[in-house]
Length: 189
Image 1: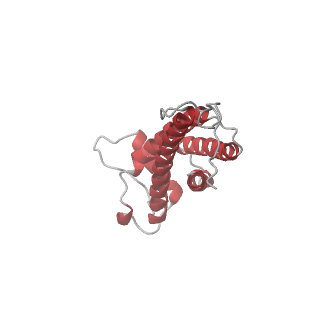
Image 2: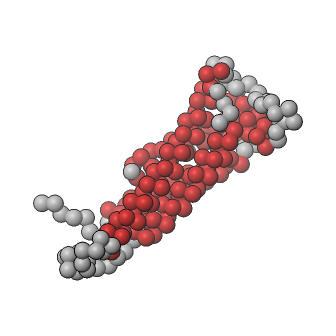
Image 3: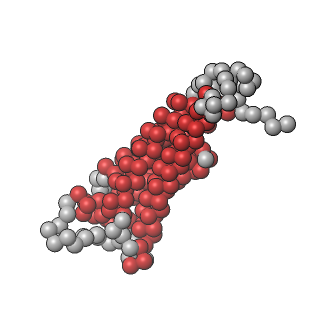
């Protein structure tokens, strides 16, 4: 699961960085949604890398992993909602093949912040490629939030099982380590 999280976070960072680069090269201000997405994705990717190493060295307490995965779930969900607000209105199959990515992105996020009284969407120069990339960014944000939710649930279930929540006696009687914050991977040989 951590491998998928790392791959999706690296892709999110790459897509968002590309959008920021397009906006900056055209001298547009970068929408706060992209800045927030980059911050959350970079910090979460750092956590994924560190937790992966600590997990295999048996140095990551499961309750801390549950709390951190829960926080990453909340952050990824917020990113998915913020990015999804303007992206949900897009129909990529109805956009022209060519367009100016920077102008389109700037108008898209500006339109969400300042809704027109008519309710009409005012997007300038959309392109199909940038539309599909935005949809991919949104989808990966949703998938990442789901994987953090699942990993938080898995960590708390594993902690409860190791702590002795199954009701089958104490940890020492089962031959397990009685420290509830660390666990041993069972030897199946």
